[in-house]
Image: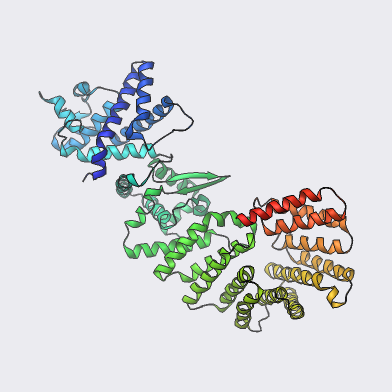
Length: 586
């Protein structure tokens, strides 16, 4: 059945096709003035208002683009019919496609179609009312033939597909019914062609949030996907072919950001692929998408290299976690994503969203029954760090102590890191003596574990404890009756140890550099401190976004430059204020 929106717009659409015919006919006659005027009319045609070039081009250029796309769509519609269409009433739909192709693509006037149909329609349409019969097939007359309806609908959708091909469409709610009709036509076409991987790809994207997804996710994280879609992900050639097929039909949009390609379903169609599924299948795809995203995203959101992908994925994470909550399924996977999202927010800018995400991770994991105690403790420690940033250290003591209680007296790197966090929070709460004891306990365990395993992750845990304990020692040296110089020397030796047990450029490298500069400054080795801080600032600025660490490095560099009577200290301090403003606004 023809949708009401299509019937209501047929006159505009038909008029647009006739205007394209006029432009083609003038071009064939080599009448440039007539062609340009016809192209301007096509550019202004209401039928094509939503489509094509507009800014930065003339009406003639826009009209020429539209004529090319419309002609391509009409030819595609003709290609859906047999090579030679039957001339009886049963072939009316195919006859409509033949006649419109001759009229628009070949530029033949309606009154000459009777003679031009030979070879395409057999037996050809004939009789004294031939022109009226042809107009009826083409829906040009007041009483269009109902038998031609499916051909006319095919014509409309194939032209739509050509106009949407890899080009943004200006859509709003007024055109929602047309978008639904176009999707329905294309979905049935994918089924008829047996293109199951393409249907699955649309279903996956429809299950995600209505935001573009990096194409790299599809090629890097195909493991959790169902069979046909997994085959696409594991083959660059097949993935490119499927994306091209969907782009050609206006079912996908591709955008670029820096050197990254992102893909998504046009807004008015986004919810439609998953909308055709039964409830059980929607739940299945929600679980598939959740596992897919868990694999696609790197787990260590401390690492600034992972931040761009997490920025792109954030709307999808929140959308899928909401689905997991609604369905009561995939709660462990959802909790893991929220915990990693919390760390992403906190490490970048101390964003209050970190606390919201951490609370949600705990709630999800508790709803799943806290199946793994070690993971529960990890979520509590990340929650404690988010609480400290927003509500202060006193409020953060309760969750970190809960994490310690869960871990018991374990002798592993995770327990050393929890003790280290407990020490840092005690320090922030003004309980420096207890903090020192906790730091020393954490350091003892971290060293013993790394000596036993020589594992890279255990080395990173040890480096973290050495870093944080260094800050504590530098801050409280005079309170403990120890000379600042002696403590600074001890700190430099600890930082050397931290560098030796961690990978070059690994997690904590930047914090080691910041602490090293502080210790060098206390030893009156200001030039060395300046060199370290300048290197740290360059490293932080490579991340291409403001961070708390960049702010701290700039402030420290400004202070060292001031000590050295270097006039650049004012410029560096202004830069620090700019970063601070950006952090406040983000």
